[in-house]
Image (cartoon, rainbow, N blue to C red; front, top):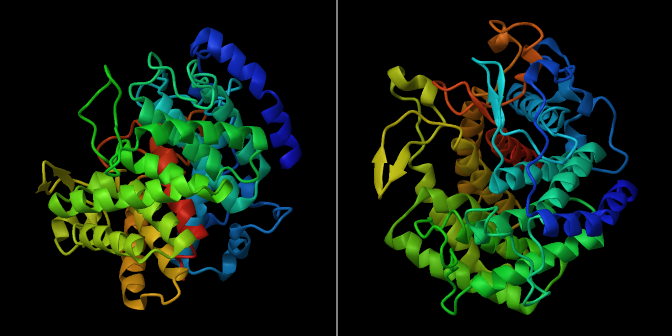
Length: 439
C-alpha cells in the first residue's frame, strides 16, 4: 500500500502547483449512470460476497475477524454486508472519477447524475474511503481517498503571507475553517499516509490553530464568510482534526487547544444542547481521552451521548415503527417529531466513538456501554433501511440498477442520492466495526 500511496504523494507538488494556478478548475463532466460499470454485489441473504471481501488483507486489519460470514450473528452480518456494499459503491468507477473527484449524486427518477461539486462533501467522501481502508486494509480505498485529498489540496494552497499555513481558497469553499478541518480529518484517517500528505495536514492544522481563541472557542468564519454556522459545522471538526493530528505529530499546543476547546463547548452544550454539535465534538473528546485519559473529556462524551440517546425513536408507536432507531429534528432547541433521515448516520458515528472510548478506558463503564451499544445497533438498523439493494431496485431498468445498489438515500420519502450521504453511512458503519461495538 505504501508504495502506491507514496507514488500518489509524489504527484503532490505538481497537483498543488496546478491548483494554485487554477484555483479549482471544474472537473470533467461525470459519466452517466448507465455506463457505470457494474460491481458484483448482491444481498447478504443470498450469500453474495462483495469483491472487497473476496481476499484477505495482506496486513492484519480490524475487518479480519468479520471475514467468516457464517460465524457472525445475523445483526452483525447485516452491518458487515451493508458496510461492504457502501464502500464498494463509493469507490467504484463512475462514482469516483479519474480526476479524483466524486460525482455529486444521482437522480434515480431521471436517470441522471447530479452535477454538483462541493469541497466539504468531497472531503467527507475522502474521509469515508480512508476509514474504509483503515477498516479493511484494502489498498484501493486508500489510493482513491488519497487521489481525492490531492485534488482538494490543489484548492488549499499555502498562505502567501505565512508558508507554514495552508488554507482553502475562499472563492472555492463557503467556509475555510470547516473545509480545512474536514480535509485534515481525511488526511489523518488515511492509513500509512505518505509524509508529504501528513505535512499538508500539519499545515492545515497550523491554520486551524489561528482560529482557536484564548477561551477555547473556534472562530468559525473569516470576514465575508457565512457567520450563521453552528458549532457542529466548524468547531467540532476543527477540534477533531487537531486531536487526530496529535497522533501523527504530538505537540503540546494541540493538546492544550483541544482541552480548552472541549471545556468551552461543554459549557455551551450544557446551556443549550445541540445535536449537530455531537458527532464531531464526540470524536474530538474521545480521541483526547484515549490519548491522555483526561476524565473531563470522557465526562463530556457521556453528557452528550446520554442526552442524545434520550431523543432516539424507540418504535413503541406502531404507526411509526419504521422510525425505530432514528432521531428527530432539533431546531432552536425545540424537538420536532419528524421522520428520521440519513442524519442518523452521524449520530451513530458518535455512538460508535463513545463505545470505542469505553472499551479503552482503564475502568470501563459497563452499564453505559450496554446502553450505547444498544442505541447504536438500533441506529444502524435504521440506516441500513435507507440503502439501495437488489430487491429495492427491481423497478429500475436492469442496466441502471448497478448505479444504485449499495448507495444510501436521504430518507424513506426521498430516493435521490447525494454521494456524501453514502459517505456518512460508510463512516458510521465502519466505525462500528473498528470500535468492536458488535460485542
